[in-house]
Image 1 (cartoon, rainbow, N blue to C red):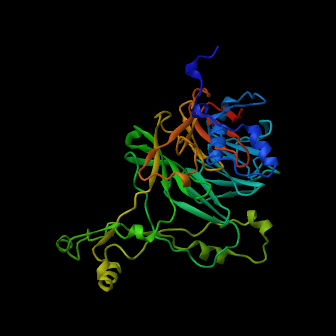
Image 2: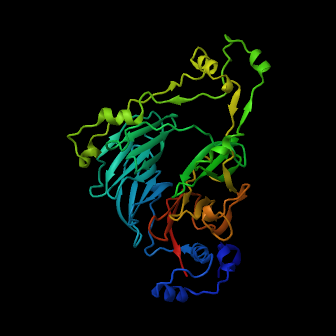
Length: 439
C-alpha cells in the first residue's frame, strides 16, 4: 500500500468542469470551436496535472553510464538522445522506450549536452573541449569533430533561422559556427541590455532555456558558496521605447571633475566587447558557391574569433571625443529595466552538478529537477499562457505537480517532447524515467 505522503501533489485534481471530454469531441465533430472562456486552460491543466511515470519496457540501466546530464528529442519527437557522464550517447525509440542504439566513448570525457540540428543530425559537446556532429543513420562514429574551446564545453544552442550553432564553455568564450550561407547580408546591431534582477544574489546561471515563442527565458541560478538555488523567469521581449525614457540616472558634474582626465580610473561604468569578425563577415568570407548544402557537415571551419574594446569606453579611447560632440549624454548612465516576472526557490541538493530545466512545447509549463524527482511549474494556478497572465510585480511560480522520489538519485535533466505530451527525466544514478498524462 502506498502512503498518501508519497503520492504526487496535483493541483488539477481540485479543478471542476461542466464539460466532459466527450462533449469536446462531439462539438469538435460538429465543427464548433468555442466551448467556454478559459476551457483551453482547463484542459491543459488537467493534462499536465495527470502526468505519471509511464514505461512500457523496463530497462536495466548500466551503472557505468553515470549521470544523465542532458536529454534531447528529435524534431519529430520519434527519438530521444541522452548525454551521459560515462562518455556514452544513448538513442531511444520514444514510442516504446526501447534503447535502440548506443555509442561508447562518444567523447574522451563526459558528454554534457545534445542538440538536434535537423531531422538527421545532432551535435554533442564534452568536457574533452570538443564538439561532435552525428548522423543518426550511421551513429557508430561522428561525422565531424570541432575544436576551438580550451575548457569544458557545457552548452549548445541552435538557431534554425540563421543556420548558426553556438557553443559556450568554461573557458569564458562563445563560438558561433556558421553551417550554411548567411540569410542576411547586414550586420545586426542591438542595444545591449543586461538582466540583473533576481530573487537572490545570483552568482552562477547554471541552466537557461528560451520560451518556445521567444517571450521569456527561464534560468536556474546558484548563490555564492552554493547555499541556495532558484528558478527565475525573465521577460526578454522588446520593450516600448517609452519604458526607457526614465531608465537613466545622471552623474553630478562635481563628481566627474574630481576624476582627472589622466586618471586610469576615469572610465564609464560599463564597457562593450565584440568579435574581431562579425558572423556575417565570417559567413561571406568562408562561403564556397561550389559546395551545396548537402556537404555543409563536412566543411566546418573555426571562426577567427576574439575580443576587442569597443573604443567608446576606457582610457585613451575615443569616448572623450564622442561625449564632447554629445554633451547631453556625458553624464547619463542607463539603468537596466526590471525583467523578472516569476520565481521559485529550489532544493539545494546535488552540489556541483548542473540541473537542466525545460519548457513544454506549448510554453505553459516549466519542468524543473527537484531532488530525486521533478515538478511541473506554471505561471498561475489556471495554467494560462504567459501572455494572458503577465503580472505587474514578480510572482511565485505555481507548482502543478510534484513527483517526488521517482528516481534513486538526484535528477539533473528533463525534457518535454516537441510533438507529444511526453516527458523524460534523468538522474545521477543512470536512470531515465518516462511520463505521460493518464486521464
